[in-house]
Length: 186
Image 1: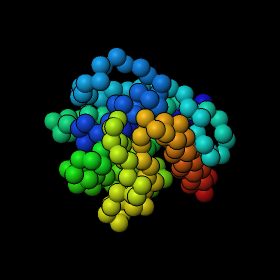
Image 2: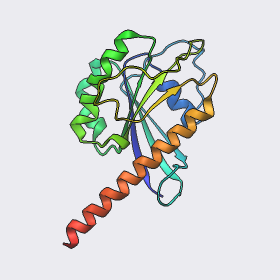
Image 3: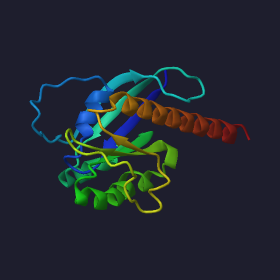
Image 4: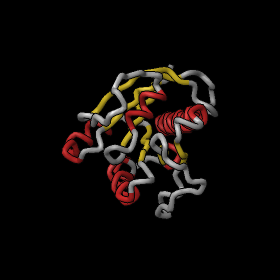
């Protein structure tokens, strides 16, 4: 079974832990109050990537990274051997929109990941009004797959979108492995 390491990054209080718990079917009794992640949480689960070449389940190591910059010195270690990065932000918080480029630069550009190994999630907190239009992003960010997350109204749409993203990551991993093998042969 293929193993995929995905990083969940983004500003503090953007909903990374809520999404990570939902996607991994992890339940935590947190009483609805915000508790910041300290450093990183690693969740392991199996998922069925959609659109991957072999359509087999994969093992996902989902690294739910703190959005607190006091952990910045640890981020290079977290990035080691990652196969994909998901940037999660709350579109209702103006500072989150400004921070997206910083997260992109630190976690995506620095690793040389291709666009389909990345995902932007505009995560709405319960009770928020979901906007129908896409959030305005810098041109280089607009090439990255984008989804809106509202776990109150369309939770299974979020899960299916994540599974399609996993399929993209698995395909990118397979293509990279094939290129490596060909370079050894030639």
